[in-house]
Length: 367
Ligand code: M6R
Figure 1 (cartoon, rainbow, N blue to C red):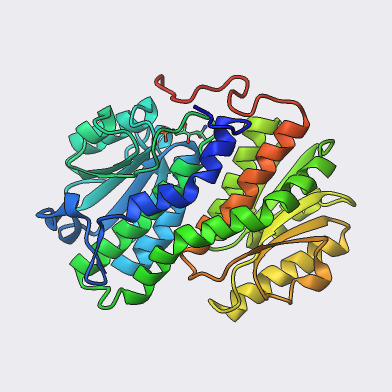
Figure 2 (figure 1 turned 135 degrees about the vertical axis):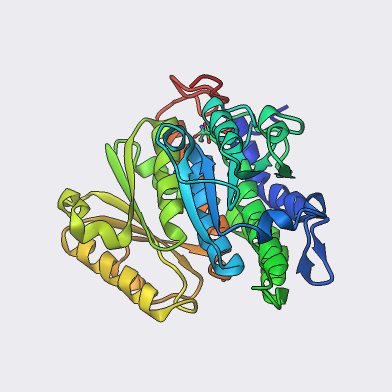
């Protein structure tokens, strides 16, 4: 079952190149993204003026990446709502709203109830799910399956990567249908290159990041900073660490630092910073580099995740983890990998059960 791996989580982290490749397979035709399951359902994307993505936990962080991608490509407003918050207020939704739900198991009760609620209110519903025939897809107008394969470890890893992949595909599919993406060829090339790039991060950084985690086994708190699509990855890095290593961890939008969290920085505080490529936006990159300078000046121990060749981070980083060059929307799939490895190695260094963390179940089927 575990096939020689120390844990299911280790196995599933290593399976991410295939999880992403399998999710893309059959969905690219003539240089365009065409999701066959959505054939004949163009009205889902044309008759709407708003998208709400609803999910819980890790799936809600995939949703946040999806917000950036769908807004950019499909030019429609996207909000992300935690499923358990969504249905306990009186959301303004109707026939002009597409509610996209994301669930690995397809059985999460909070998410299922949000989908049912959205339908009752007349919204259109589409689910992204990893489990064939699960309840949530059965309750939805349409489904886009992720093909990550069965995920056993409680901490979600390959399903998360497959969810982001499905959202990128959905964004490009919607963009084509809505006429806002005329030429998807660069993005399609980026998608196709992802599995190999993820494999490279796994091969090149596994030892380095595991070593780093080993040195930090006594750490009591770790912070994660990101900007743009790096922000949800910071949240995901923090959740992984909380779940399996029981260490206090928080993710922040880097720009939010000066509005409060910077007060937490004291000498020796470990902070992971996700640095977006300067090729995407020199301005955004320089803002993150100045965030690094600000926390470094206050004694933070800065662990940077940056693309190969980005030398601007070197003077201010205690550790640099490298990821291959990728388009802005595709970077999260590379940057999340070292964070998964870090959480896993830290839990292992503490002698914890990586696959079965305390107090948690793989599928949360109660509200
Ligand atoms: O099966 P789902 O994707 O609906 O599960 C949602 C969350 O419960 C899940 O992602 C949870 O946060 C994981 N344990 C994260 O690692």
